[in-house]
Image (cartoon, rainbow, N blue to C red; front, top):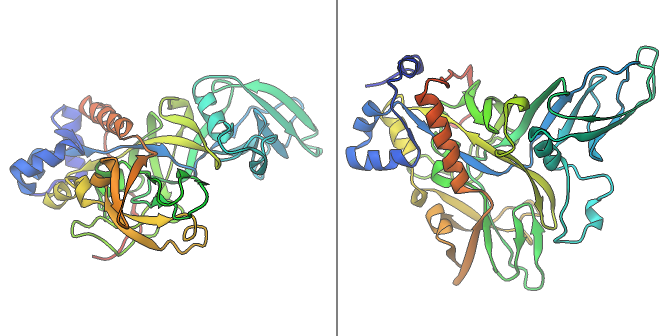
Length: 387
């Protein structure tokens, strides 16, 4: 028996769709088998919440009088990119305040940057906009300063070039002398700790490893509101090294996503100060996966013990772009709080929140059950490997 997205949407509109999260489907498949689960369940909801550096917002402000073609823009003293139209600019999540250059802030001090500005704006706070320009006949104004907020901005579009990695490195440090500071957090010397960043069995792309249902145009939960997958994420590179269940054992796929910031919530977009590294943005993403057939039921029932991530030494291999793998470890082991690595017991810590990921999956589940959120047919599949 197989189903179509159109048939599932018809059930959603009637309030008859059976929706479970990616934790719940595991028990259903274990008890009843994938074939029967596919007959019973229509949608599985997934979620992830963690730092996603490749994120940002396109802003548009109302024209000033006289008009200005903004050449340089700062929001709360964080530079934005202005090489587009007159009053359009893009704020990147990892951009630092201009008076806070990365090489002058000691490790451990809080940094404020683009991710925090985005959080402030989505939370309804006023932020200070400053702009300068060279002046033209049609855009004569050369300076502009004002407080702006989510209501006074003409538009604010979250547009993230690379989110929701399908799998990711576990970072360690084998240097014997020094702690190193990375986007995966502080890493203690001599394998003092191991940091990872994934929701594992709840993570969207791990539940559809071959992108059968997830593609360009897929409607998603993004930052607390509605969003869409707009393209393959940068660095999207489906990896052929996979487990028997199809789950890649390396980074593999990524998503480019977008949505209206004005619909979103500060609970699901949080600025992050990463010790010794800089700033980022914690992003909440949830993807509904239609259970079209037995294979999709089997894919979505993937468990943490079946998902393996590569362990990489960030003191030597990562900065030299080798990404040599020391070992592979399961997410079940990572979430236990310790792993065995090169004969040593190493404590683990996750930068993403499994609790928040499950909350996202449950919110999306509720939206679908209430008929407030229907599924979309991808207009084009993501690039994928041949099976």
